[in-house]
Length: 445
Image (cartoon, rainbow, N blue to C red; front, side):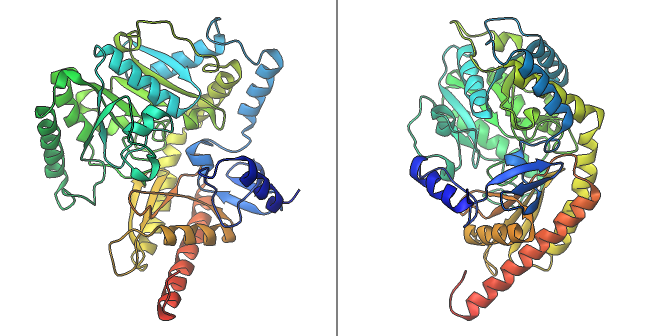
């Protein structure tokens, strides 16, 4: 069946807000390593990995073997029964978390993980219903996580069971503090936080939830140490710090295993949420945190599908592969090479405002040439040209959504990084040339 007819069937039975990339949406048939193929036989270098989810490699034999063997024994049991793979994966994550006396709860997604963390923080804080969140943030698709998301492009309603107060700090090169040196930027953001708390009742604030590097927001971040400074303020009031590591965890930033470690001077977060990469495509999310907070629920609670034997087996195999092959170091080394190539190209491209990020989590912010205005149309155009060249990338960002998101599997080789850089730079050059031609013709693409 052709992709065209599948697209029509998709539109007929799925909601209109379910976004698809590309003017001619892709149907992928299979993958291997860092590459995927569509149903027409076209091969692509995958620089987005299912939204940072295929963390190690497509069709990783170790994960496929673990899934097959577990599925042949038992697919499902729920948390009402003891589960050896769930306990074993929880032990490994607890040990890696850096949190003292940790407990782990597994969910099926990052959205559900953040939902759970908000519930736990509120319960621990005696039913407090205020939440501090960062501007430009994204935390999921559920009712409560949409309600705290600070990016209007991903927040379809302002109705929420929580009152959200938005804090400055996660966008370094835009906003009121953009021109400040790092130390002054951090001081200004801390002063903003303290002023906000002075105008509310801190006892009613459950938590600060923050991504160390904002994912959907376009791979933005504040200076290292920002959340350590925030934590000192929060600790005085007993407010819980939730580090949303759904996209930054498992070594993707290269410099650290967890994103919070760039802000660790005041200790680890109280709660850490994770998902995406740990399952390498299988549906795993979860929360790890201090026992006194994790045990704060005063009612029964279970998970039907969180901690499934099959997904836990996948997570164990995937985490084992990542650690044994030191993919965090690979992300640091190969990511630096890739970013250097892109930064060199950016200096001669008027449409590239900034290349940013860490490790294999790189954002390329695009603006209308001659302005500082993000341009979502340019980002869409570059996506199309990259796809035509055989490269898959993502996009995101704040208002205007003009950021390219580059996040390949952490096993990316130097040769593949060089190839991907060539393809992406070529797509940028073609898009900029098209923009200039459109301007000469009196129209902008």
